[in-house]
Image (cartoon, rainbow, N blue to C red):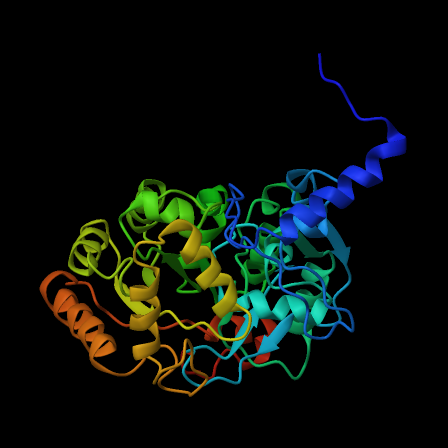
Amino acid sequence: MKVLPHPKYHHILVGFFNLLMTNIPTMKYYIKGRGAQINPSNPFDKLVRAKDPILQFSDTPVLDQLKTRYVSTEAKTIVNKVISPDVGLEYSLNPYQGCEHGCVYCYARKTHNYWGYSSGTDFESTILVKDNAVELLEQKLRSKNWKAAPIMMSGNTDCYQPIEKKTKLTRRLLEVFLKYRHPVGITTKNQLILRDLDLLKQLAAENLVNVTISINTLDDDLRKKLEPRTSSIAVRLRLLQILASEGIPVTVLAAPIIPGLNDDDIFKLVKKVSELGARRIHHIVVRLNGDNKEIFTDWLDRTYPDRAQKVINKISSMHEGEMGSSTLGKRMRGSGKIADMIEQQFRLAKKLYLVKNKPFQYNCDLYHQIKEPQMTLFAREAC
């Protein structure tokens, strides 16, 4: 029989617990199913709060507080101009803000601050759902001033994260892209994309879609800690194979490469994805800007304490002594000996194994034919 304390003394017990935790700063626990283990203060907040989720929610079980909650929002716009020339795309679209996949290194974490949340556990446990995303996209594609250009879904957070199974926002967005024959790119780590295979096949038949599957390791034990709520590596490899067999162009994004954690199986990774039908593979080295530095190093201390400092030193060596970089052209590939070694391994691995390394070109002509049928006699270049 469970004996509960009398309500009269509850606040005393809470106070004692807070005092105990405050005086044991080295105590390490692990929140299973979450990447970030801390919740740094939002830099835009006037108040500074405890970073430890247990201290923040000391009067309620922490795991109850960290259950994912969804917040309905009405976005003002849905198609965003990408101003970074090294990203390789002009526009992005994100039906969700925050991502339950919980990848501890995610560069998008700091964007949660602009919505009033922390980039730590908030980012993966408080998901904003843009309910009007479909309507906004259709308005954009019907606009007289819009000219066809590939729009990347998941430029910030995964469009196939768990809540998509219920909302079907991504599927409805794909239906709009198909309706207007407009080019779209997708980046994901979730097998839920197979639900929309019927739409993807129709888009692919007219060169309107390219799918990028994110796979940065073949070690699923590492994946469980690094990307706790994503599809397993085996599932992603099977996903790649199915998409490729259905004639859908598939690119693999090996990102991020973290020296000391997942840089030892680059050749095996490239060989495997090539055998399964990937047409291209690109890589990005880890960069930890803003709160990501603290979130990642805290996670590293809890999960791989034996090699934490070595990994940190290697990361900083790729960014001129810092944990991240914002310099265009360098931030994603890094610099220095370790970054060069990673680059050379990928270059050689692609030369050895990736025989299908063919460029993909989206078809922008069909959109204009539907939007401006009177112009169908004039040829337009692909985008």
